Length: 201
Ligand SMILES: N[C@@H](CCC(=O)N[C@@H](CS)C(=O)NCC(=O)O)C(=O)O
Image (cartoon, rainbow, N blue to C red; front, side, top):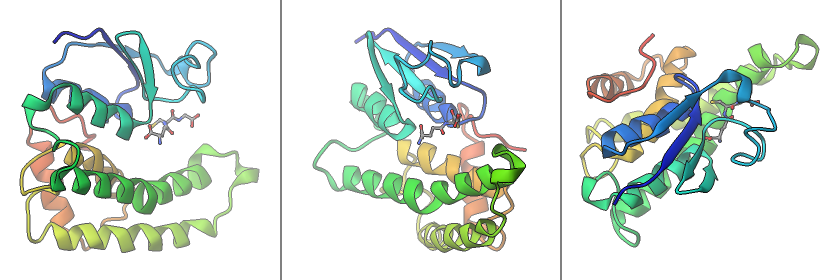
């Protein structure tokens, strides 16, 4: 089935999760990459906070990268990137995306805000160490799981790895993955994929 798809995003930001998912699924899409749309009235009909990513599928808007990637995979079940609703594979996908967002990515984002995004007067340096401890506690969980399996769900690549891999790579880029060798091997497996959109720098 053909869909009219427009993705709003920018380079290796969280929109790259959606871009990678679309490429893996073989779906055609228009990619609007325009930094000036962040915070704009033009983007608000698609994302109420005018952030990236946002997507429009057959005229319907959707935001939040986890919701977008999961929905895209539901549109193309034959691609095998996501277990069907009600299966153990889908439950594990839900588990790891929730874990990734709440136990890992939130702490990286908080640190990024307090080290570079916020104006100096709003930054609280004390949060950085606390955030690092929280992130690394969760990263250790993944590092242990990945000693048993190359990927997070049923031992094979899935959209869960596109999603979680982005946060693990952000942790690496922020110097937070030291000592977690399985996370680096995991990223190397992801970097090797043809459609990978993770920032390797
Ligand atoms: N939880 C959201 C995060 C969205 C988000 O914060 N996106 C960033 C880019 S990666 C953004 O647009 N930031 C601009 C801002 O915060 O004003 C998701 O996963 O889609």
